[in-house]
Image (tube, rainbow, N blue to C red; front, side):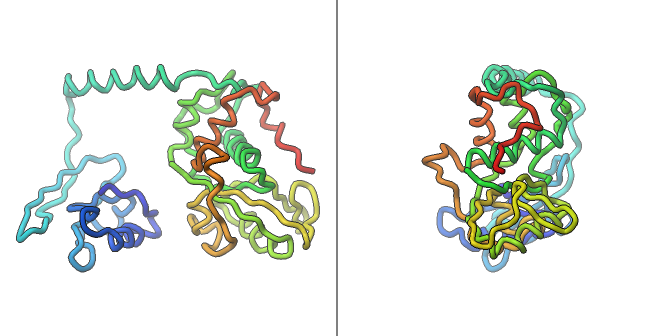
Length: 284
């Protein structure tokens, strides 16, 4: 089992909770877990669970195992030297994958023509705008780490699907909640106060909060869209029970994944090409 469930703050809790639910044929012999390098290099999960070893970012590791009385044991888990010379056969195979990847993904998106340079921050706004329009929500929020900088920003002329996939490297499932205006104050305050959050649709000026330029209506209902990670308390932006978030309608939307939604949004001419970061969905 390869697990990337944990953050540095949660490790290794999420991985161990998953293991406690796996039984029978689903029970792995070994777990390779990311985000636990500062906690543990190797450990055994509780009870009769399998051993857990760490995959440190950017490093190769070599793990020696032995089977003893029907169970796997870790004899050693150590960093391994990166090879100085490539394997010709593997290199050729990887080049072939690269050609196929470029043929499939390195094409300009129909709705991805750009009016001006698109920097990393502006791309984040594009993602939030896509989330709102695809879900019909007034407020969209994600954690800053959901958007990565692969090194090609700023982008000029047009966006490709390959660039979108590289800048959104995580399979983040979308979640949506409908919140009454009388209860939304604490939620939007938490979003605005969180350094790790980027949001669209909610603003604070001189202590007054507005949603898309309007005062909050206590009797109104507001749709809020985010990722499962944020909705479950990730990066401390929201409490896990801040709102009754649910999956978006996968059948109607085509996918619950953030990257898929952004690609669908950019995959056709939306009538606003070239894309302008200042031209957001007007919900006033």
